[in-house]
Image 1 (cartoon, rainbow, N blue to C red):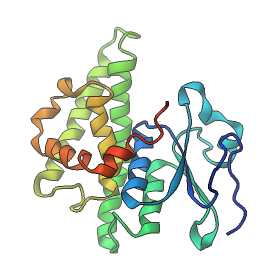
Image 2 (image 1 turned 180 degrees about the horizontal axis):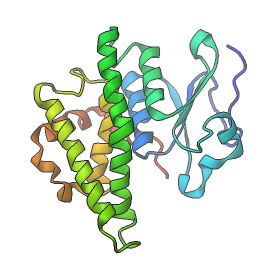
Image 3 (image 1 turned 180 degrees about the vertical axis):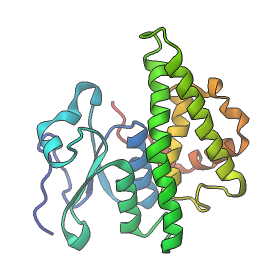
Image 4 (image 1 turned 90 degrees about the vertical axis):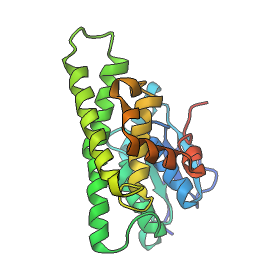
Length: 231
């Protein structure tokens, strides 16, 4: 293994472990859940984004130029060289390939999985996040109802896409996978974090509700979603 650089602001106890830099937001939860599900030993470093930790100069220079969480360092990356990764879905894909778990191995099946990973990144995350912003965090900052109405309607539409997708399968690509790990924190967050479950009528979607119960009842999911929680 080549020399591995670690951000000095967050001291490392075991330099042979995967180092996770995160907060238990929806995107942060994805990686915590994934590491727990795959049984990958790791060390966690909590970044308080409310205090701007994600803009630490070393962190931005070496780990995440976009100043976001999560990021990881794997000292034993490809060819046993260190790898530094940002973007939660890229991290999930990397860990699935590294461990050979929770993602298809055949090219055709991988294409299906990649489509739904991109669906989460391009639609579920951004639209649910905008819904949360205008419904919860900006509700007293504007008298214009256009934004919240727009994102409620779009979130409902996307939830119905998931409802139809789950019509003939228990999980989004058949077997439980990183696609579910990537998507569920956002679905669960609509209720538990944004408090929008009632206005979205999420309980009227039986397949989404059953899928949510299946995923969130997994011990690794329950533990992993708390990884990176502020004390």
